[in-house]
Structure formats: structure tokens, C-alpha cells
Amino acid sequence: MIARLDLDLLLSNEAFVVEVDRARSVVVATRSAVRFRSRDHVNEVCEPVQEELDALGRHRYGILVDVRSAPPPSSAEYESWFASHRQRLVERHPRAAVLMRTAVGKLQMTRLREQDSTAPLQIFGDEVHAVEFVLGATWSS
Picture 1 (spheres, rainbow, N blue to C red):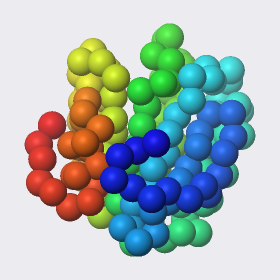
Picture 2 (cartoon, rainbow, N blue to C red; picture 1 turned 45 degrees about the vertical axis):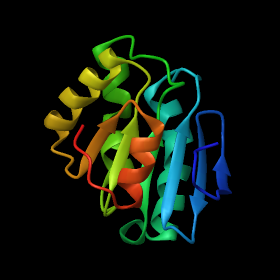
Picture 3 (tube, rainbow, N blue to C red; picture 1 turned 180 degrees about the vertical axis):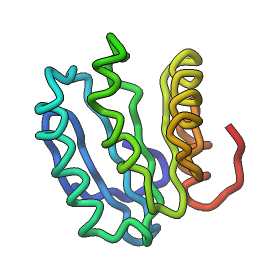
Picture 4 (spheres, rainbow, N blue to C red; picture 1 turned 120 degrees about the vertical axis):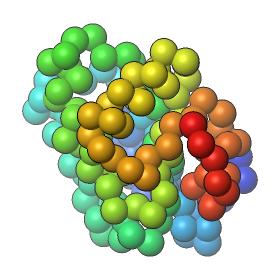
């Protein structure tokens, strides 16, 4: 459970749990440890997440994407399978934060952020700072 948020379940599948705190206008998408098997598998598990975010109204909610449990990418091809969903996941939200487990993960996500040009995405290794950012505090990663 993410500190300081009162989360209700929106969606759960083998790759993601998506929860919302409607009072604070925050969505939390938590990635599981399940490794994507193919591009089709990525679309199968990610498209329902994208549809939930669209239905909710992305522009009304900050998003925190918690990837601390996600397996690291095993190849450039594996990374490419998720690229469009990674970008869509954070687009049109007023604030977007990614919560990483390791310093190496933060560096990788920084590279991807620059590649994707996904401002206002901020990258954190600290859950408290990530939540505070999504709630409106100013942090630089």
C-alpha cells in the first residue's frame, strides 16, 4: 500500500494493479513481477489499463507508476514491446511519477524519459517523495 493514499481498486491483471484515490485525484499503477512474453502479451495486459485511465479522465488525475517489482528488460526487443504503452501510461496526466527500486533502474528510466520526451514525468526511488510529488509538492529527481 502506498503511504498517505486511500486507494480503491480499479483493475487487476497479471501485470498490473491499478488503484485510485478519488479524493486526492491520484491513480497508482503497480507493475507486478510477471515478465512480458511477447508484444501481444504486452497489449493484452496493458490495453485494459489504458482504457481504465481514459475512462477515468487522465487530465484529472496525477499518476504514480510503481515498477519496483517489475523485472528488468532482458533485451532491446523486450523493451520495445512496452515502449508505446510506457509513453501512453503517463501522457495527459497533470503529474506523473515513476517509482524505481534501484539506482540503475532510475538511470534507465531517465534515459527512456529523454528518449520519449515524456515531461512532466519525474523519477523517484523514495515512495514518500513520489507520493508527495503526485499530490503537488515540487521535487526534482
